[in-house]
Image 1 (cartoon, one colour):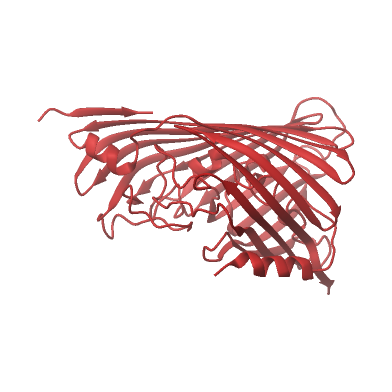
Image 2 (tube, one colour; image 1 turned 135 degrees about the vertical axis):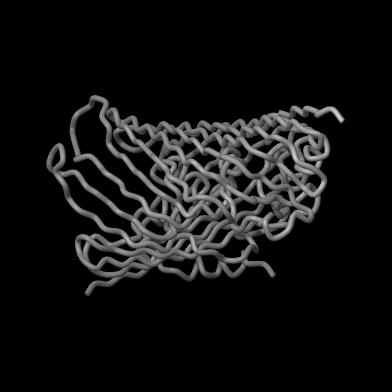
Length: 419
């Protein structure tokens, strides 16, 4: 047989609403994690809740995009109902000026709660090049550092969904166990370009896009600054073994942070062994008065190795990449608007006697670029509650318009005390 080649580009919302309205007022923050740990010895409890009601003519969000190799799960249809978009409850502790700890539990929709953060951190002032530099060491469960723009997108922000690139490249969120060492430059009034942060990390690599087996994964992130402009570039290098994905059509509904283990069983699974790299880049700027911000970001997941199932094996080369451009403008103290444009594309190359069948099982057939455009308007006159109205359209094989009404509450300093 000649080798064949295949080329393919209970309702938690009500409870959360009661929780939101019962909590005392706090000042708004873009992200709960920003102020998770107090600056002086003591403790702090923070929380955040996002609820949304979606209207769409078809299932929303899109259950599964053709050509995107994830774990085989399908997004739950939330159209026509009030649902919990994201909730997080966190605790920050500071022992002294050097040592602190942080823990946070989160939940999405009706999926099981999960630990988002459980780490300790040490901070020291250094003067390797000039006084005022900082060194931070973190150990434990945390988000793999890909840059602030990428990390914050989809986390209690102005839009009901994470960018397509995050959904496709890293399965929306990438939380792993590991350690990182970050150097931060001293504050400076210079307007010229400079290197502001360097972060090195090593991760256990048992979460997607890694797998249940394989070597630890190193990471690198660099941040540069030029006046109001900030740029991040990052990379993570993975060697997953036995990473599974459910065969097309048999994946569970909902989202989990686990990965099917092909070493335990290959039944109803597509299995990947090889090398994977996740590369990210972002650029952000804002105005002097903070009334507007502009962000651009992209993610690329590059995979080379073998793809297999009980029906065969093929040499596999896959590329999943996406970009987005986002702007936000506050034209009055209580009114703001945000817009986001996105594009996602995939490329798959399978060579071997089982290529055609594997492509069908993996859902590669019918893959085409996906685009999304969204416009959101927010009102924050009822602090600490924000009301957002969003409308947009996603386009792949067909156009899928949608509209969303969202309530956001964030209390980064809900309760706190000292010792």
